Length: 241
Image (tube, rainbow, N blue to C red; front, side):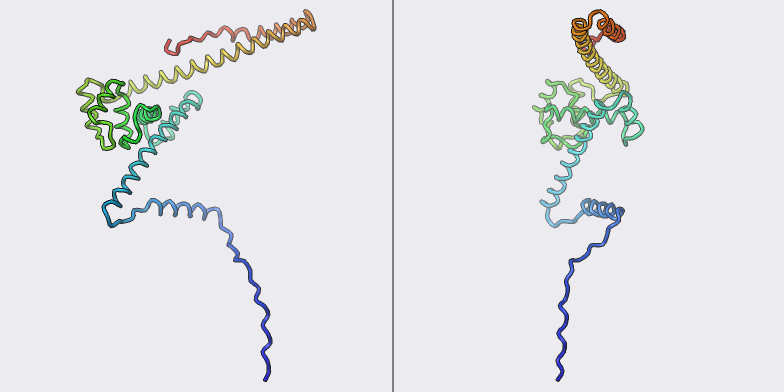
């Protein structure tokens, strides 16, 4: 009886992953985002409440971050680009941007407690525009809570005689005040830099005079004369002046 030849040992290879085109990575991310955004039915009341509560907090976090980014853009972008960005690049107008910034700034500064606020920038803006005494009164009346409605805070402000909304002109006036303060701050920084430069020029002139005499001092003084017209810049110490 013939014997079957022994089979050759099986060679095992690590599985080869197919190359993935760059576009498919984008599609994968989109599918993952869609899965994360999917609405899943639950069986119990507490499950629905927990999910809605989590999304509620995410909404608040989102507009607070938007407000922070708007403030950073206002501070960091060159003069005029912030307004142009709002008009051309963003999905809301200047008035909405102002309200979001004001609300986010009030939370960031600690005037409004984030954990006890509704996730609605327009309601937070109404609270943010209250002065400290009226804010304490709102606290005493139980208005600082996540379920606060806009109609409640509007009625509260009307009862106290406080303005309940901001007009387009008032919004623009406050924007211009912010822009003026930013420009004056930049002016002061430039003036300080010029003072340091002039002081260093004076130190160099003294050293050159001691080392090279009249000829060296003439070169340094001619350079200082070129800077002199800029030195005449005078900046008010108070930004409100």
